[in-house]
Image 1 (cartoon, rainbow, N blue to C red):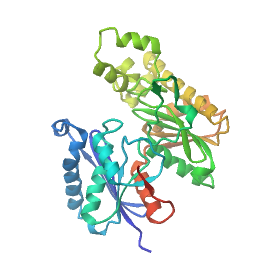
Image 2: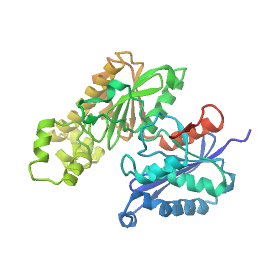
Image 3: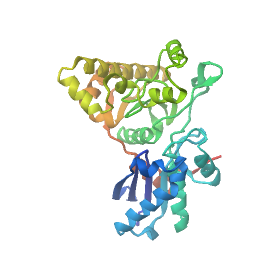
Image 4: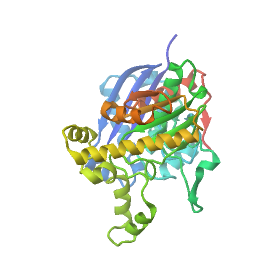
Length: 356
């Protein structure tokens, strides 16, 4: 049996990752780096589309890969309107919203745009899988405490749902057979509650939950309002402080978690305190998500780049293992997750969804 060939594309803020898959097997993988001066000449992220596409095609041609044998192209989904998880065929409505950035500008918005363009060149379908905007909230989860502000579901859904499928299979069933608390540990931290295949709650990593290497997470509201009106910072400066200069960086001047751990292990008391505070906050958020699932948690799963640190994961496990057994799946499996999402649709294991 000939396995389908799938090209996966994952655009990031300073790189574009590409992978060629034959069924579940990865034939080729490459990270294309982009210098700031290359990208800064574009007014909007969507304007980078042709530049990044040209680089992707160049790399594939250099590797002598025949794109005429492709069956599908799949791209990282971006900040679309809220949608349920799954694999979506790229259509005109989706392209319009990705280009306009309906929930904000983000490099992942380029995934569907580039995938569609390459797919059109070869007369094959283009897909996205579990975009950042996956929203499977129950109604009660949307209430924030202030009527003008609704809680939003924005998360590292692609990697999170991929490990949910993997652990479900390991346990002898599927992702939709279990209740999980899944934690993505990276530059931003997403702590998510999953009930039988639906991600029913998550902290928006840009504004809620535990602090991370560069984001503040939840802050004391009254004090934050006072700081915003203090005259010290502009609106843009405050946004940057919260999403790029907060968390570990705010206290220690670095976002490099390996360096922070090294300092903590070496006896740096401030590094120890701040790192332990992040771990403490992650544990609290896991506990909160366990209550969302009414204590019926089959597994807690730790994933993402920071999950490579046994120093950090062991301390988290110590705090939360009373809730449920903990599984650690370090790193990110986003390229594989993209390919597998498209593969499930191509092989008829899952129905493609339509973006409306």
